[in-house]
Length: 261
Image (cartoon, rainbow, N blue to C red; front, top):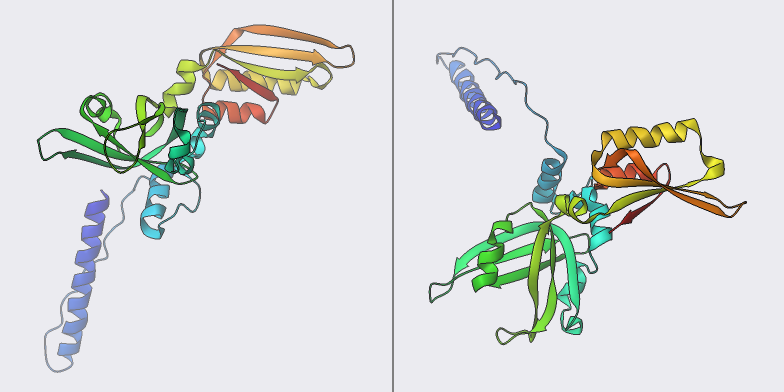
């Protein structure tokens, strides 16, 4: 594993340093030692994209080559109505329904002075971050979602509270995983084609994507002929799909796409 390789490298460095000292001593009549072979690097699994990004954040303080949420752009655009940065200015949001998505970047599980459990988790998106605090039943209900590195959508409403420094808080109603929400809520995906732009290559490309991202969601073709002012909507009997971020992103490279909820 990585740790054993690091340990070997450290032992090698230590031994090399000792040998350098020994060689200096030998100039004055000391005894030289036998050279230690360099540690052999075994096959190591490459870092996943998320592991690379986490290392960048840990070492540099920011994400450089991308953002962990890039794989969930479709879900965020479809289901969020607010950013973490906007949630930090919470007073004007009183009475509003809030849906905010992101990655959980920090978690605390704690106990009050009276022995009651509570917790905090920080949600991060492209705009910034926001920390939620959960007590009593809310904490017990949602604590299983409080895991660093999880991608979630938090839904609730901004209400008045009777504790703390702020007069208002976001009361969480539901937390869902971003990688499941599209599949759960999507009623269908519609590919919009212009009749004069249809070609065998285009149809083959659409069929390939439908096969690659096969699932249980209905797939529709909406064909329009602007010259004749005719529009035809067809439900595919051959394909049902999985409406995740990658599928929608790739389909949009070929045709206009509408996701129905």
